[in-house]
Image 1: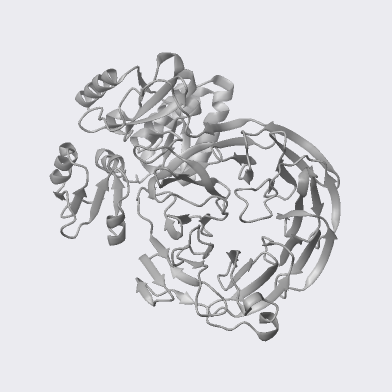
Image 2: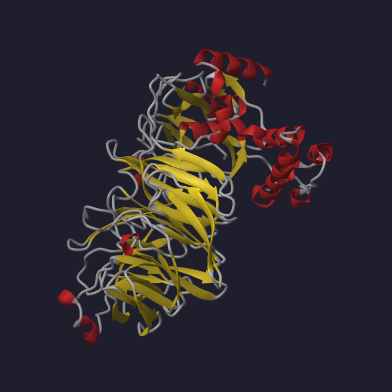
Amino acid sequence: MNFHGKTVVLADAGREDLADRLRALGARVTDSLEEPADLWCGSEPDEDVWRLGIPMLTEADLYELLLRGTPEPGPGDFPGAGVPGGEPERVHAVLRAADWAAFVPERDLPPLRETLTALERAHGVTPAHLLATERLVERGARLRHPYARPAFGVTGAITGFALSPSGRHLATGHWHMEEERGTLQIWELATGRAVNAVAGIEGGVGWPGCVDTVQWSADGSRLALAFRTNMVGVWDPFGAWLNPYGEANVTDGNDSAATFALAPDGRSAYISMRSDHEVMGCVAALDQGHVFFAAQFGDVEGPLPELLPEPIPGEMKSRLDDGEWFFDQVWYSRDGKRLLGHDHDFACAVELPGGRMLWLAETGGPAVWSPDERLVAAVGNGRLVVLDANTGHEIGSHPVAGAPYWGMRGDVPRLAVVMEDGAGVGIHDEHGGFRYHLGIETIDGTGADPHSGQELPWAWAPSGEHGACLTSGGRVEVWSLGAEPELVRSAEAPDEATAVFWGDGDVLALAGERALRFVRAMTGEVLGDFVFDLECDVEPPVEEDALLDDVFGADSFVLDEEAWCTIAAPAVGPAAGLVIVPGDRLAELDADLAWTVERRFAWPVRWGRLDVVPDAESARATLERASEEL
C-alpha cells in the first residue's frame, strides 16, 4: 500500500511509533475525522467511520503492512507440485535452490504442504520443513490462534456458519451478547485451523434460532452476514479490512435477523421486508456502502432498493392468507433470475426482476431445492413430497416425518430424510422413492424448522457416495451409501454438536454453540478441536491493553483453566515467532497455533522455529535483541 500523500486517522492515542513510521512514508497523520481521510486505524471497527466508507484496519494489521510491506513476485518459477518426495536431503536441496519470490500460495502451498506432510511421517520434522517455514514467514506468513475476539471481550457463541462453495473453508459467525459485538472467523478444512477473522462487528452476527445468517457468494470471494439484529452486510472473507463492501438496513427495525438470500455474484441480496406490494421484500445493493430504506415512510439513504411490484396471479393469491407472500427461507437460483423458497406450508418460485410468482405449491412443511435446481423436497403432515422445480407439480411422495437433505451422485440428486424422535435416516431416490433405512439414533434436532436453531445433523459427501450423521450418543457416524448401506466410521463429536459439514478432502466440520472440531471422515483423525470462551484460574501474563514494546501489542488466549498463551500483535517482523507460555506447555502449541498465509491457508507451527519465553519481561528482552539484529 502506498501511503504517500494519504491521510491516516489513528484513533488510539499514544502510538507515536506508528505515527512516525507513517509520516516517514509521506502520510499525513491525524487523530480525528474533521477532514476527509484515506484510512482509519483503531482497535476495532468504528460505526461512524463505517458509515463514511473510509477503509478501516486494526493497529496490528496496519503495523503488519508497515513492517513487511507487500512482497514483489519474482521472475522465476517455483517448483510447486514438482517438489520431489523421498529423502530429506533431496527435498531440502530443492527448496534451498527454489526461487521463493515466484511462490504463489494458491498454486504452490497445498502440494508443498502435502509433500512435507509425507516427509514428516517418514522422517519427522527436518531441515526442509524449517527452511520452508522460514521462507514463508519472510514472505508474510503470520502466526494466528483460533480464539479471535473483540477487544476486552470474548469470542461468543457460534450463531451462524456456512461451508464455502469449494468446500475448502468454513465461515463461523459469533455473537457475544453482553458486549453486543461479534466476530467472523474463517477456517481451512484441510488443516482444521483458523486463517482469518474480523472482530468487533457491531451488534454481533446472527440471531438465536435463525439459520442462513452466513452466506457465501457463488465464487467464494464474498461473504454475507446478518448482523446487528436486522442488518445485512458483505465482507471479504480473506481480507484485512474491517469494513463490509456494503450493508443494508431495510427491515424497519425487525427484532430478529433478517431473512435474506445473497445474489450469486455477492453484490446484492434479496431481503424480506414489508412493502406495499403483494410479494414482499426487496433487492438491496451490497457493494455501494450504506443502504437504508423505510418503505412506509419513503426514507432512503444510498441506492434505492428494487421492490417486487408484480401482483400475485389470482388463483395463487386466493390460496394465501391475506393475499400476500413473505419468504420464511429463501435462496437465489444460480443464474440470479429466480428466488426459490417457502413460507413453512407453501413453496414457490418468483421471477426477478419484478417478482412475478411462477408457481405456488402447498407442501405442509419447509422446502429445500436440489443442488441442480431441478427438484424440490418437503416433509409435512407425515409425508415427503418431491416437486418439479420448474412447475411446482408433484412427482413423488413417501410417508415419513423429518427433515430432507439433498445430495448429488454425479448428475443425479439423492435424498436423505433425518427422521423425528431419533428414528434414524431414510435414503430416497430423486423422486422420493424409498431405498433403505439407516438405524442411527439421531440427535433431537432434525433441522426441519428454519427457526429452531443451528441444526444440520446430516451432511452428504460431495461424491454422494457417503453421508455423515450426528447421533444422540455424542458421535458422528459415516455411512457408505451404495447398493446396501454400511457403517464406515464412528467418531466422537464435540459436546452438544448440532451441525455437521462434509468439506473438500473428506474432512468433516462438527459444530456446537461453543465448540468446533475437524475430523477426517474416513479415518477419524482429529485435525483441530476448539472450545470457545474457556475460563482460566490464573491472570494472563500481559494485561489486555498492554504493549510488549513501542510497536507490538499482546494477543492472549486461554489454553485451559491453568494456563494462558500470548502471541504478539502483529506476529510479524522481530515478533513473528514470539510466544509467551509456561515452559511445560510447549507440546500443546501445535494444537492451537498455526502460521497463516494470505489469510487463506494454514501451515503447521511445529514446522518452524518459535521464540518461546515464560513472561512479558522476557518477551520484551527478546524483541529488543531481535530489533537490534535487524
